[in-house]
Image (tube, rainbow, N blue to C red; front, side, top):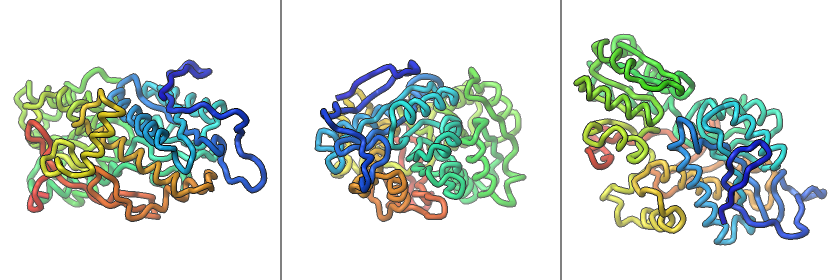
Length: 405
């Protein structure tokens, strides 16, 4: 069942839990290989999420995690253990994320953190988790800070890196629009800067001539209208959007209002039909180019596939209010499946060291609704090495043929 509670520091929580049986204790006796938060019947997992604030649209993802683990618990759990996920709202505020992490580790005694939302929020808790030896698995972020085993060996990323996304945008432009004059709107943090770094490195010696303007914004800003006007006035004929969904939508609307019709490139995190494109306006969004690692539930080519049927059955049963076309739900579903695979591979050796080891030695992992067969790059723990180019047609994202990749 799903429960809510207010922890000691007054933050809302979503739980997927079962009552701990009478007499069950945390395993501490010699020879038992359990992390804190693990018993013979339960694995306790911590999560800090943006259920409110500027990234609240991502709250659908962490709710989907809970829904998937509810199904796993009803099926008997993982190796006989139920998954108890304590998910606290941080409002996308790093200070609250740090407070959440302390509550989860020190008061709730979770085994590890999973699926925590965002770049600045996850970066804020890295020093604390490193000091306490607590793993951070599969944060909702593609920052290269979470693919750095030398400095953060207990952190394992899941998403394609922002840097990779930027390089893929460069590859597309060099092939299809080599004379582009690029204006970049980016968030002034690791999320935005790493995308820009990938773009610039991918363009190589041509970067200085092709990138004619860059404009940043802060997540606390009200709008990005002035930045879009600035980029238009630079003479750019190509617009690369690297922003939270509400700012992507604002940028698309503002460009349309001022009659600016650039080629528009969108970072892969902003593709949600419900969370962004409908806010921007579907007709305004026609022609936007992005890159995909997930399969679109609306794609006619997979309508009869077993993996889509399984996904839709799960969603209808456990998350009936979700919109099937929401890419965020698809991502959360695949991410939760990955964690369950890792925990199953742990067997009864549920130490923090072994949990990290299993998470960093994945290979030939075939995830439903994901294009690429995944496997860790041991130098950086990266799971993804490419994505497919796609274009929005006013109704859905369409994967481009090989000649247009």
